[in-house]
Every structure is written in structure tokens, then in C-alpha cells.
Amino acid sequence: MKNKAIFLDRDGTINIDKHYMYKIEDFEFVEGAEKGLKMFYDMGYKLIVVTNQGGIGRGYYTEEDLEKLNNYMEKRLLESGVKIEKCYFCPHHAEHGIGKYKKDCSCRKPKPGMLIEGIKEFDIDPEKSYMIGDKMSDAEAGINAGVKPIIVKTGKEITEEIEKSGIEIYSSIYEFALSLQKK
Image (cartoon, helix red, strand yellow):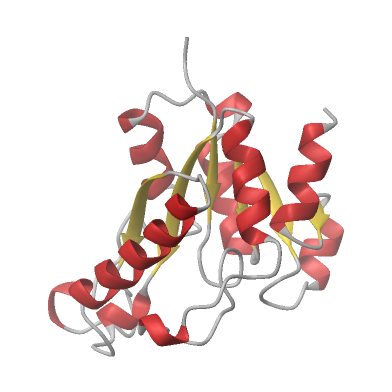
């Protein structure tokens, strides 16, 4: 039997978005995120982070900086009884990337590359899975990978495009977790 997963954007969804954040001292969970993630985990979902990190491509910070921050986040969540299976990231930017990072790739959301990789690596059933993010590009990545998109209001402003899209919108990860528990 295949696994079910919750794919998660990071900045603005799990943690407060602080524009090209890479320092541990700047990391702050969105209110209720830890509780919501624990609820998903307890419901048997594999938790997989998929995050665009154009700041690497622009030269603002390194892959090692990102790895340190993600390890910190994962450690904090483990202390709450939550396991993140993997943090996939896209360092590329077709327009603003520098050197090897300046390319049009298949992993930068809204393209589904990171989700497809997670689906293969963790034997995920897309039809039983969700993609949670705070932007239309997150939702589109989910749709493009065949998983159900969910938008949360904890990051970017909800656009008219999102409101008219028919995509389910929740105030936070925690609110969606409460709703999913009832299904």
C-alpha cells in the first residue's frame, strides 16, 4: 500500500516569511504550525517540505546555510514528536540566478519536480496527498503533481486569482489539520 503525504512550502507556511531567511536566529514557527504538523503526523501522513530557495541562486546565502536552517527546523519538530521525511529545495532562478543556478529547471514551483521526486522516493499516492502553501505557485505545483492543493493565509496576501480558483483556503496549517481530522 502506498503512503499518503502532506507536501509543505516552508516560508510563510511553516515559519514566518522573513524574505530570504537563512539564519537560525530569524526562524520562527507560524502560530499553531507545530500542533498542525503533529496532527498530520499522527494521522499517518509523511511530511515533506518543498521550498523554492532563489536566495541561493542569487548568491544571498549558500546551500550549507539552508541545510543548517532546515536541520534546526527538523530538530525542533522532532522534539515535538514530528518527523519531516525530507526537505527538498530548488536553488535555481531562470532570471536572477548566478552561475550554475541560473537555469530554467523542473523543480522550481509551480513546476512539480520536487513533489514528483518525493512521490517516487517515498512511494506516495498523490490522490491521498496534499500540497500546502501560501502562494498560487505552491497550489499549482500540487495540481501539476496530482495532489490536492491547500492555501494557508499565514504568508503572502491571498490574491484574487486564489480566491477565484476554487482552491480550499485555511487560516493556517493548524486549521487545515482540524478540518482534515473530521474527514
